[in-house]
Length: 122
View 1 (tube, rainbow, N blue to C red):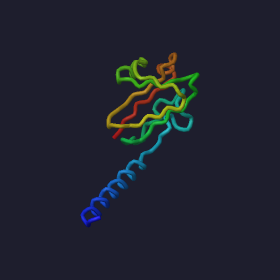
View 2 (view 1 turned 90 degrees about the vertical axis):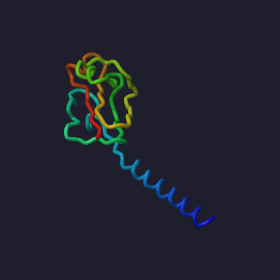
View 3 (view 1 turned 90 degrees about the horizontal axis):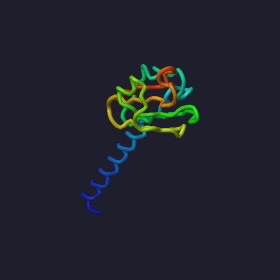
View 4 (view 1 turned 45 degrees about the horizontal axis):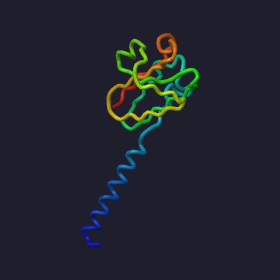
């Protein structure tokens, strides 16, 4: 290889390492804390910082709950219109700054039991 080719290869290698280091800095955050996604967890996210690249982990009993990604209006009214996740171990990567809204769409879990979360990503 010529000296110029060596420099290009080194630059690509260094760039790749920097990008990999940045990706591994992402956190996996259990929604609802140690208890997970479920009853009486509204507000658990207060005081936490969520960054682009972080992964939200929704752990719950799928026979009791689900997770619906909703608009702000549907979050406020607890209306389950949106993408529904229901595996019991759902992972959502935060890809942009802003606020995303999640509710449980089963029965009145959102409205009367507070099974919802508004996550603001910086």
